[in-house]
Image (spheres, rainbow, N blue to C red):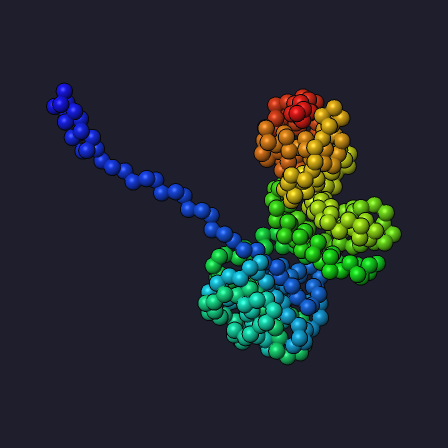
Length: 355
């Protein structure tokens, strides 16, 4: 017996040893950016085109800038800026920046020169913490400011604008709301990639310009159509926390349905799915299972969509949106996508609400 134990011990000691598996590296964090200018946009040449990694697009101002004007790229938090390059001028070579400087800022407020433009281009090795970079003319120019692209090498990485968009704000009826409304616009711009990814379909390009107007005469909450959002001055003065309502309207701008006869409950349900399940999850509230019905619209229909997507197809909302946009939606779509009719799904969902 002792011999067997000795042999077993020897065998075990001879077994090869294996290192513990190396855990997968955590995803590297990325930083978002905002881009602002003292100059308004000319036509559709929006600010975000200057940081979208597309050499064919560009920002262009609607007037000739002075030396007090700028185009500024600001990061959500400071990053180590290794290098930066900026190309100005239109693709045909017109309107290159002849007198200008590239400036950097550690705090987004105080700027200092990093390099001077030559023949419309600039490159700078920076190698330190930076919160913002900007292009500034050093003289009053005789042509618009046209910036083709910022190219930056940073740690962590700053993401370019995958779906460039620019919101134009009109608070003529309530100028005192401007500061609040500008924050709302910024939120909607930040949520735009999420909305466009969720509501993507083959060949569709989301709008690059959206006009947000606050009207004293408008008695609803908000509405959207044709790339325009209208909000009620009275409502948002009383409910300044309801930023999600404008995210909902931004989703309508991206939906961009043109076909007639589409079910309104699904149009609104998808927009509220964007709001309550993607932008501000967990805030939709509880539903009464005895009264809930899939086509009750808004957050109720959004809750139905979330249930079906979670149980049957995580891409359900994207697929339904594509059918709606193409004018091919019919009630049979539910059977095709899930294997069950919408009424069967409705019963399952209502049962899930019983607590």
